[in-house]
Image (tube, rainbow, N blue to C red; front, side):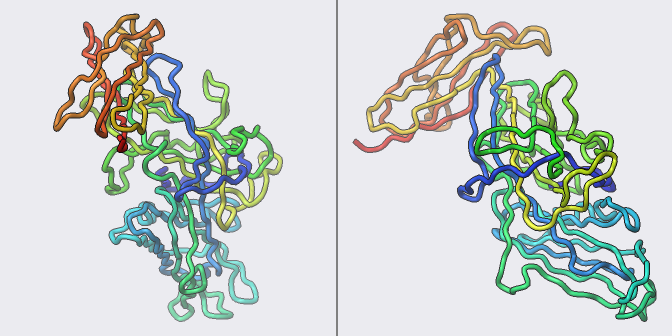
Length: 446
């Protein structure tokens, strides 16, 4: 979903080659993901995946002032699917922008499964006369999915002059051109975005900073990042949504800055040159997790990497911009790295056992530093943590275990029924208490 400032020129895009295709599983393009914790208290999640965007060039140029109408119909109706209308910055310009006044219309729909944009064309920028009247302006519709795969249709109408007229403003020369895609009444197109759940749901369990890094282009089959080349350019975005978030007057929690450096890259040919103190290129977004704040421990947040646009032509020599947006369905690979504060980590619990079988639970404990903003350290050897299981509305301790020198702990518990687990540490001094995420063990019959 594009939540950047309206009017930022889409003159150039971050250098990006199209990644190798990945098999779609249950409406998602995820190829692989993993969690690891090498730094005390910080879980690193790595996702190799692909993102898609569909761009439709309106079949006829806009040659008259008046209402330009776009309608998106999509299914399932409870998925998140959005549209944006791109219009020219100036006559003959190689740049496009979200049409002024339309930002928010395409993702704040009031009817399930439907989004509508109405744009008042007040001027035809390219009014050079041709055999049909005037050349007119090119407009594009961008379709994004932010929750797995959506089937969709686009329809609408554009203001046009009557045949042979060069009068772009009078009522006498006004007409409307209807359009729809796909052309067949029962046909649908599809676009896929990051689904809810799985690796795209993140749960910080401790106070600290969540960091989201998005790198591209990536070959997700080989798990490699392409070097910066004169390849097909593209632009990405990334967002994090709090639980039960709904769009309200266009206000959106962002996980990245919305400055023009992410969009107008004439002076920066790759999406953020190697970040200060870093050795990689891409997007970087952070937010602070604080008890009682806007982002709280133990809430589940949804991470959404979004492919905004791809260019139709490779880069020319700077400072020449790339060509117009590539139309149709575009797929680009990426690697997302998310740093999640989890001082007490339940890394694994046996997922399935037979009745009376052993469940093995493993994790680590890090102790927050006494000085704010200082790194945590592994818990001293012998620190006791409580492995707990859900019992009615509360939790009961099933086993007490001690940490090793590297902060790791392990517990083995026999179970007879399906059980939900968590780990709890009561704290010491000014540190703690800490609680882990919850994992589930399913018990099968004997």
